[in-house]
Image (cartoon, rainbow, N blue to C red; front, side, top):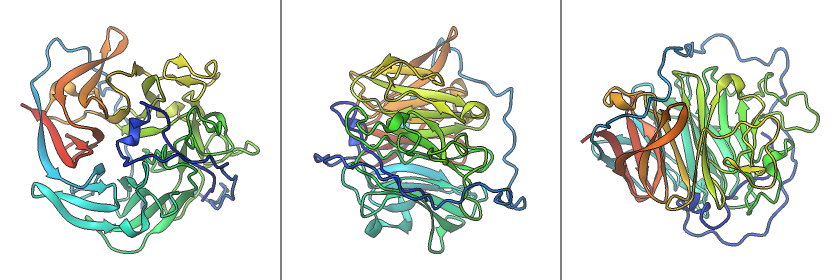
Amino acid sequence: MRRAGVPSPATPRGEIALAALVLAVAACTPQAPGSGVADVPAPTPDAAAPEAAVPDPGTPDPAAPGLPARPDELPSLALAPVGTFATPVATAVTPDGQVLVAERAGTVRTLAGGGDGPVVLDVRARTTTDGERGLLDLAVAPWGDELFVSRTDPDGDTLVEAYPLAGSQVVDTPRTVYALPQPYPNHNGGSLVFLPDTTLLLGLGDGGGAGDPLGAGQDLTTPLGALVRLDVRDGVRIPADNPYVARAGAAPEIVAAGVRNPWRMSLDAARDELWVADVGQSSREELTRIPLGTLAGANLGWALREGTVAFTGAAPADHVGPVYDYAHGPGCSVTGGHVYRGTALPALVGGYVFADLCDGRLRLLVDADGRVDAVDLGVSGEQIVGFGVDADGELLVLELGGRVLRLGAA
């Protein structure tokens, strides 16, 4: 695992970002991230994962609808409570259709019986929750028998582990997949997404401090402020087609750069597109849609840009700008969601549903005559900190206060 330095949201409003996840963000003295040692083996001709046992991820459907046109009329929607947890922050679905819910303090429970179901994983003794730290995300591997967990360890550092999984039960001790020191208690990022080729994507914040004082967003020598891509089946390897593998001094695990504090990434497998919600600093929140074919080498612009406006400079040559951004007030911290691919709400199919921690309104990105716009869905929650999907592809909404809700018709 590469060791370097990491995260924090900092700054007044934009930092309520995950301040949603915070009790308090104490003043911290910046620490220079160390360059560290890469323990992840570099790609070699024989380092490829075995061909057997990896399921065919399928191919995107070129006919799958993209963003829907602005609707003349939306159906009446409602958020129905389906469970109550202790600060739920993320969900994952097991191969047998069970929804797992990650609680920030370090437990994973099943969503069952209208309340918090049985505990299937408890790492509270090995997790710290000051600032924006904690158990931040989880993902079930495409091969079905491992649960990947992204959390901060007792030192506050990023740690990604893989736990053997049988059905919805964790059955053994984990293997360490990735570790990274964190100089601040916020801007941890932590989102996990498996790509169609079964590689794992990890979103990391910029190391914290207002205005990216570490310069991590545009610094390829550190994985801070970047999206990391790893081959994690049967060991841990850096994919040979990562864009900076051959660049001297660059962190070879980086696949894309220029993020501040990505608070939720999701994959629209129907169209092979990655969505990244990046929390802004003091001005704008942004949502970026990246076709997977253009992910390698993408630069989302931070800290040169904050959304569509300049922050410290002009857009980089390889800039992938947001498909949609919005100014603060009343929103202050974007919570990334999912492209809706369920069946219960046909009018929403193909639309990206997201929210903001501060105003709680659910919104749908649509195509407004060639321009992406957001439509208010007419429903809201309280301090929405995450989204998920159930086994049927229906949307789940996670509130900081504990409720898990399902979006459906009123």
